[in-house]
Length: 100
Length: 243
Ligand SMILES: Cc1cc2nc3c(=O)[nH]c(=O)nc-3n(C[C@H](O)[C@H](O)[C@H](O)COP(=O)(O)OP(=O)(O)OC[C@H]3O[C@@H](n4cnc5c(N)ncnc54)[C@H](O)[C@@H]3O)c2cc1C
Ligand SMILES: [Zn+2]
Image (cartoon, each protein chain N blue to C red):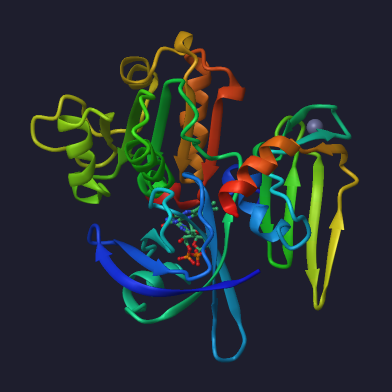
């Protein structure tokens, strides 16, 4: 990985990978950064694609929010960097209606 | 989680971009702005996954359209734009994403800002506005290398000039048409000030394209008074260097 400033994508780009784990869409969910306390949509996180997985970093302080790594038949999920992730149940129902 | 789509039509939009129509028999609908992940697997088991925005408006059909811009040295896009044939099957995951979407219930002014192939999910929003007969006011600022690289040109022209569904401003980065008022160049503060919704109307802004383009456009929109929670972004990756 180079450290080029423009290497990252939006949290949205990880949604496919995260759909392996979460039944609900996480991109519209709000997550709080455990480091700086900023609360933002997961879609707003800076996303770095790695060979074996993805790393999402806080858009404000760049600390790691979430890491997902695929190792052979296992998926490792590290969410230490987030105090919480809050999902809008109503919106989720609405969007799953449309998706249903 | 992976579904199979069968290619039912191919259409060249420009010399380097192709629209792929897929029939996905278990497709359950999508929202404008969402994407799918496409997985290609070689006979030796090696696989590559790439994301592609859905270009078609949400509808009740089990077909979706993707538009792929070819990167000369890319791994996946040359295959999708040159080798894929009608009847071929692709593995898909999605629809994906619930944030970079425009829903037909939204009534506020909408500012779309596209760089190159970043027009794709924004086109789905424009098409969705049309098919839902929404009255939301749409503006599109479309930054593109040269006239020949404009995607959906005829459709955009019809929608802006005759139908007034969206007002479109083109900004050319390399080559502009003859007599074009603005010399070729990257988008700047003056262009944002003159062609996008005034920030006091509190438009929702959707910015999509190569990462460096999104970075620039978002900075300009913020500087002109749009609050960051009204700006939604979709970065396509480091393709800005050649845009
Ligand atoms: C959410 C999302 C939606 C997307 N939607 C679309 C879409 O609708 N249409 C579309 O065409 N693409 C879209 N993309 C981009 C797409 O996913 C691929 O990244 C793109 O097609 C390139 O893939 P590739 O395998 O051909 O190139 P790769 O093999 O991935 O690229 C090869 C190498 O070149 C580098 N590189 C790539 N492009 C350039 C460049 N222009 N100049 C210099 N270096 C470069 C890469 O970093 C990489 O190292 C989307 C991306 C995301 C994240
Ligand atoms: Zn932070």
